[in-house]
Amino acid sequence: MSRGRSDTRERAQAVARELFLKQGLQRTSLQEIADRIGVTKPALYYHFASREDLVRSIIEPLVADGDAFVLAAERDQPHPRELLERYFALNHQHRDVVMLIVRELTALQDLGLVEKVFDWRHRLARLLVGPDLPFDGAVRATVALGGLADTVVVFPDAPFDALCEVAVDAAMAALGM
Image (cartoon, rainbow, N blue to C red; front, side):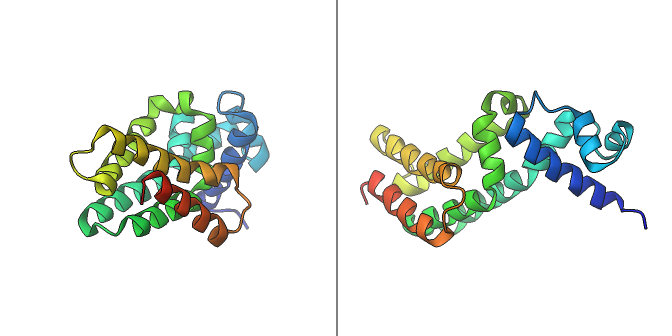
């Protein structure tokens, strides 16, 4: 029985994500990905128009979820602790992509993702410390939000509940709350 289009696409994304994390974006060839999933390179191009298209397909779920998260936070204006817990959960859910972003920041800059993440953080900082975003509050929010994202990279195998509690406590402390 042959595998379907979506199965091949998903396998290619999984292998690419693994190799990108292990070897880096520039040191992973499309041929290597095709070989690992047992298709030809032209078959891989059937699913992804380019390397950039493949990378975008891996990052897009985080972008979509992040956009939805920020919009919901702006709409609902949750308590800071709840906002931070949800932000941690978002980063934890997509920790492999967050790790890829941290490791390949320069390479991913051309995809517009870095600006997107900074925009999310700026908008969330305004919710955490106020719409005027004073300098000290902006710095504290940057430490809080960046620290939450960093914990899922530094402690990828830590139990979710324990890591979330400690990370959110630290973020709240950074905010002076």
